[in-house]
Image 1 (cartoon, one colour):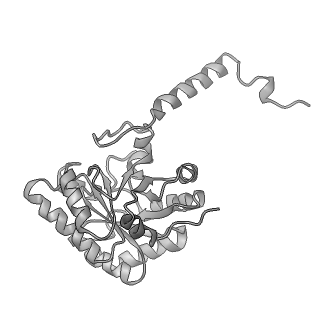
Image 2 (cartoon, rainbow, N blue to C red; image 1 turned 90 degrees about the horizontal axis):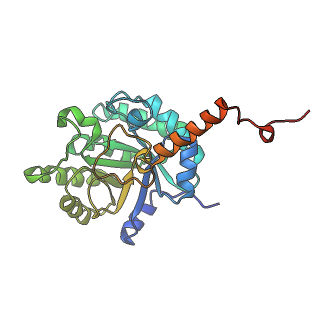
Image 3 (cartoon, rainbow, N blue to C red; image 1 turned 180 degrees about the vertical axis):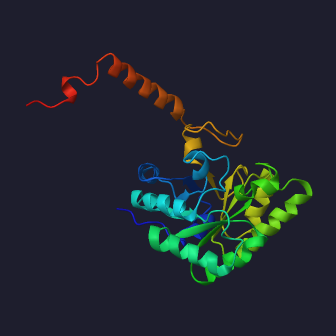
Length: 267
């Protein structure tokens, strides 16, 4: 059995120019499938608020929600590094509250890192965690927890705003993050940041110049139709396949073709 990746593997991947493969996961079964497929980083994202719970934003997700799902993902994986989102409301509070939440995540789930959304505004939280040897995956650009401040899910870092995203990325690196997610920013800016930083960048809607890429598994597999950003590539129309399979099951039940003798037990 392969040993699980560690935080030390990610700077090596960047140095070797080996792209990092990251996919979100929320349960035991998907975690195992993604792990078997060779995913490097399983991110238990607060996007579960959208694709699992049916909310319009990630804001209602609780710490208990994140811990519950991260436990399942850790149990389902063997090789991939596992990181857990800190939900909305934690990283803008005191360092003690952030630390307490992160300790709960690592102790109760077995995850190896927490993910923190925000740039310069949350560097104190990142620094407090990394100084106590808690690995942090940072997240700048379009940060979904700031959806109301952004006026919706809109591309960030265009024009003069590019300097702010760059400053955020530099700040989280200096605070000790081992990698940073770049979401929803222009491709040239993402490439510039990736060359500037010594830590790996993982892009989503940030073009090909990042050190790795992440997609939400429900988007990748075509299982979620609630939001279809242009940067998502569907590798499977899973929703259509599932509807077809269930419709066939329903037809066979109603026509009494299932179960047949081969799907039962004799005396």
